[in-house]
Length: 224
Ligand SMILES: [Zn+2]
Image (cartoon, helix red, strand yellow):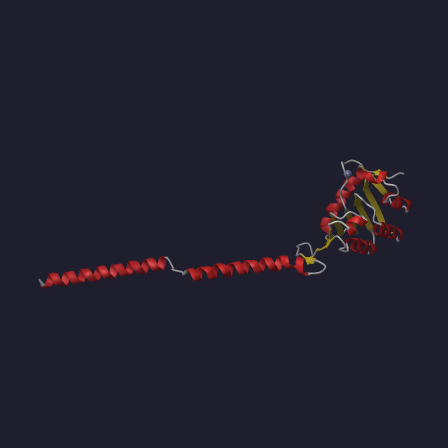
């Protein structure tokens, strides 16, 4: 009888021990984070991701002249961006042309901007090799930028190979590219919503120069 009671007691304590170890094992498998702790973790991760995104994107909003530097294995190209209306697109083009030393290649669709045409002629007069390709629409203008440039002695061509030759590109000294939706017109500066990128990057400039040459190959000299 005593041995029976002893056996029962041992069996109970073994079962109790088994239950405890099972509970301990399941607790170790599933760390029981409370809802508050989970919410805090999610909020922390969101804040981290948010601040990383902000660090990358914010300069576009904060800097008045939107100058952003991007790291590159090839050097440190820079990109500036300007927005019309009255966002100094024309000023920045004229400033870049005034700094041109060797060569300027232009592709333009609509071209009525007197300050930009004058800046091209000024560059040509101080010995910069300026060449211009324009859309065929320039032929039907009364006194177009094409006339102004051609009369100043700038090699001026018409690209009539396309429905419209719609590029607006200026490549300066093989390293600066000005492009965007911005046509070289007063309306683009004063009335329209446009953008202009000023990209300083030799590799990008090479691509634009190659494209300029492709169009030059099937363009004709402008004649009036
Ligand atoms: Zn073409």
